[in-house]
Amino acid sequence: MPDSSPEKIWPEKVWKDFCQQLEQAGTDVLNWEASPMEQAEGLRYLSRLLRISLDMNLENADPEFPYFYQASHETAKIGADNPDNIYLNATISGQNSYRVYGNRGSAPVFSFGSKANRYAIDGTMASTGELDVRDMHVEADGSFEVIVSKDKQDGNWLPLAEDSSMLLVRQTFLDRKSEEPAKVHIETLDGPATPPLAETQNIAAALTKSTAFVQGTAKLFINWAETFRRNNLNTLDTVDQTMFFKAGGDAMIFYLHGYWDIPTGKALKIKTSIPECEGWNFQLNNIWMESLDYRYHDIHVNNASAKLDEDGGVTIIVAESDPGFGNWLDTAGHTRGTMLLRWTGANEHPVPICEVIDL
Image 1 (cartoon, rainbow, N blue to C red):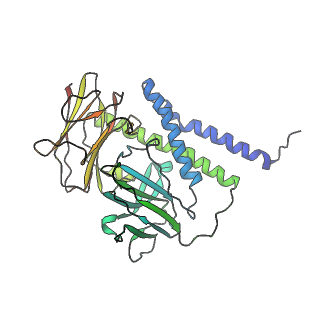
Image 2 (tube, rainbow, N blue to C red):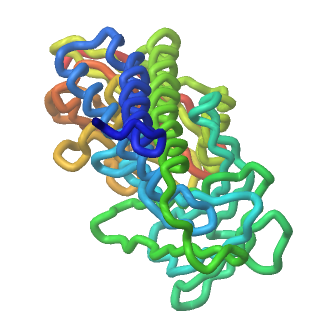
Image 3 (cartoon, rainbow, N blue to C red):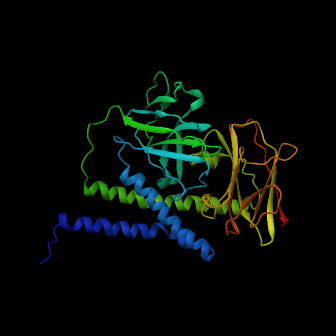
């Protein structure tokens, strides 16, 4: 007769609950009106969100033993991920203090942010502290050290709040093939010596958080994409930045989002002046707000790669084939999606002129 004691059956229930929660978490994506190709990308998107979420909420969830992982990269993408960026995340707590150290590499933009991650609750990621490399002391050999804590420290210091739960490191490159990524490490200054052993109760809580993250994140960016489709069709004019900063946007960046939908034989022409800034870039995404596959297609352009117009501005052409002028971006087999122009550290924020033209 099988053993039915709670100690034996509880792990099985945990797994069944997780599978049921995961099924519910995909509802918003699976019920979205999409083409067969977009539906396939939606399935892949859900698998990617789960992979990111398990990394965040299970494998790297202990704030007393933090470790940097990548929550967004070539095959895991969230919320118009930047093809020019390397993102590093670590789970932290406002109740602890940390030392972050390493070598800054050669990325032109390098910054740290502490966040209160509430994606699974209300779709927000509040900033609780920001530190830019331009405001840091860095040794001549590129080495650095940052103290992360609630109480102000001398030297390089990143503030925490009571509910800080994530440390985010952003590196923005002009040419990732030639520039050196930073080496970044983190350690707790006031934590225990060894991590605790695994407990079923803790695993259960982590799995519940993981499915909540999948559902909350998918719903948030579906709502964003639908908002852009209604209000910013084939335009880039999201001047109000409140929504983007609420979701954890970089304080250095001014975000101009839009939704592109181009009939066969047409192209979207984007013309803008370029302000004085640290840098800029433009990218194409699918309807799930994942950047298109920049490993194999030219789907983004930045201030280093762009060919400028005679007047010093830039013309970007979004089309299925190269029209022979401007900076052509490949739609990679897509006919619609979202798009994003970033002005980083800019003294003004021009709104581009966008028009659908014949190829």
